Image 1 (cartoon, rainbow, N blue to C red):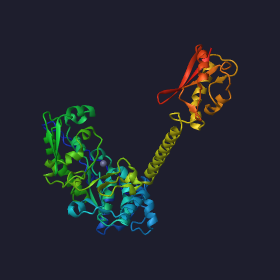
Image 2 (cartoon, rainbow, N blue to C red; image 1 turned 180 degrees about the horizontal axis):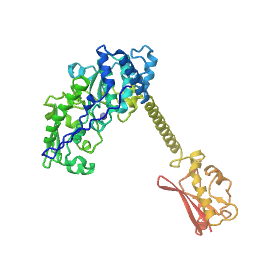
Image 3 (tube, helix red, strand yellow; image 1 turned 45 degrees about the vertical axis):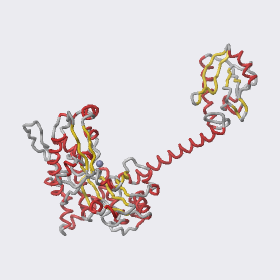
Length: 495
Ligand SMILES: [Zn+2]
């Protein structure tokens, strides 16, 4: 087994005088719980337990294959060939190949942070992967592709290890750990993806923690001024500091410090910086994790160098993020040349996600082509939307036929419907079989607006319109056909 079900340590709950309850759950209890896989893998790095490591690694890969990828199936050294590597995640492979070919350089955050910003390449991607549980299997694929195509130190993986809402999910935590070990074993930069707001709420039961978003919005909307500086932000609390931001910051310092220590204990890695997670809890929507971590007050503690959304990071690079699945994911040639923080969530690049995205794109293309066609037809016609004789128009006119059928049924009409008022070209098939040449013989009259024409001629000529006027005095309108708010035709039943 890659991981065993870890029994979560129940932990004691202690109440403090200030009514603040410390986190009862020490997620790093995982360390003590029986997560054999991670430890066996670490042991392997030291040249021990090779057989156990082999088994663990093989089944880790199959776990991640089952989770939606097949990234474990290709030998890590790329021996199966480039085609097989591409197959792991074709969209990502093609994306990197395309940007490489157009001259882009790639950096992880460590390289970027230490680089002389005055001599940065013109075309640069600082590659960031946020790895949530759904991203784990894809992360294996991405790394294999990066290893095949990019130099070392080209991407940083930010892993959501120890995310409070997932702490009870021992298997999840173990999968994160497996990935972290696998990546760091290859010298890849791995850093935490964290949510200070979730850490805070899980640890301190503040009065606002359970408030709805609308209530939180109400109490915070006018209170906080976020002052932007070159090296971060200051949050000014005035005058009713509902979140008690100064107290919050003080506590966050402790929480982050503890987090870093535990991360190191568990992974053997040092925390240098974070990427803020876009948590869905209410407080994160009024006071975002990225803003909290960009505060000069917190940065000054030196607990972390920066958050990946940080003001300083963005002084020299723009944003290229895949969160909304933009079209450039599959058309990298459309990216404006420049320097970017490139955020790629592994699961969005997996083959099934790509297929869905391309299907949506094809649908949108077809819809826009149809709209263009309609506009072109409309330009050729005096009809606002349709032109006589076209399929689409007969479809619209089907509504008139349906109204006539309904009217005959509701009013016990006997014999055949006899319809006057249109040339063959503008009628649906059913209506066409009911056309009579004389208005007096008809029991239904279609009266077209004067401006509507068929093949360049008015559908209803002036004399015909005059003749109809008398008949219409004793007729009843049953429906009308409208386009762009204007009445195109009215249908009358004769009494
Ligand atoms: Zn996230």
